[in-house]
Length: 424
Image 1 (tube, rainbow, N blue to C red):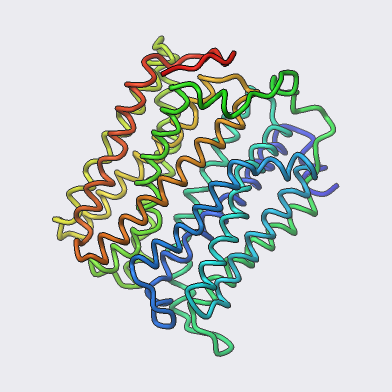
Image 2: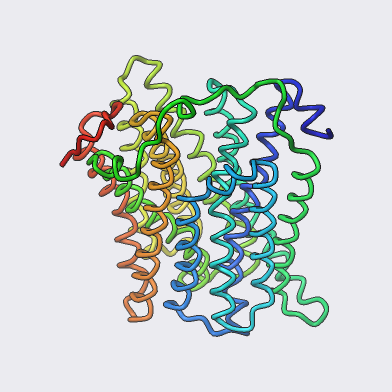
């Protein structure tokens, strides 16, 4: 049976499966960073203003958010092995298709298709982890998978800069090869996955509680103010995060004089900090719980400290030092991913496992919609001549507002009664 069949017989093999899935998530974050880091080179062939850039980002986020909500549908019908193969193949071809674009509409279509594919990535990863890991090990396994987001984002600046610096091959512009190469990496992973993955026969994955319980409707979830609060908090905080993710390269090039060499040398540092934040947020909350704090206190203390890392971004426009700018965004990326780990953990404290998939989908959709709104606002502000300062001030405030919303609408983080009773 190959890798999964042989190595997967023991605990070590299961962690290799988790690492394999983390590699897929790393490729997804590499793929979504191709446009932001190659944007200045693309503009030499395809004029892209700030509002057009926001439109392209929104195209990705719209389908990404919708597929995040419904991504389990395909997997439930054709299984994890074939489902992840279809998802990865689809988004890899969508990524490569950017390199064939001759105008903005073609780029927009590629972004829409990339969002469709990547939106199914985390549902597929979650399902695979559930198949291979017992409940007590799944959080640690998902932590490893989530670290793949940082790996992909860290690899993106130097790898893309290297491809761009090589110039074009076969008469094609170098930026087109960025998409061909990164799309090709995904197709190689898809072949590896299909050749090696299988559902374990040793019963490692135990049935989840949701399999024995009736499904909980989305309307029942949204009737609770606590659910609306966590979706709203994700809407606010991901508005800032997607702005940083999609606009930071352009900001560094335009406002701080970055060139290709500097981007390759230090552009990866904030993304590395985000990986550290992913680990630290969950660790702190767990340490507080082990120390005797309640779930409510442990989550909110860690969330509050994470949110406190974000307002410093307001200082970036007034900072002339490149090192200081990188340090500011590194702190923000650290805080964001610490926050993200926690805000995706809170639903597990609030609803039974039977409702977790739907709540996670709602939270992901809310985050994507926040990213669309913030991106559109940024494009308008920049094209109106307002500059980056007001945009960064707003982005720096959103996590604090999200934390205030959680504290206001969720006085105590605890399991909810989803029997149908609404809350104001």
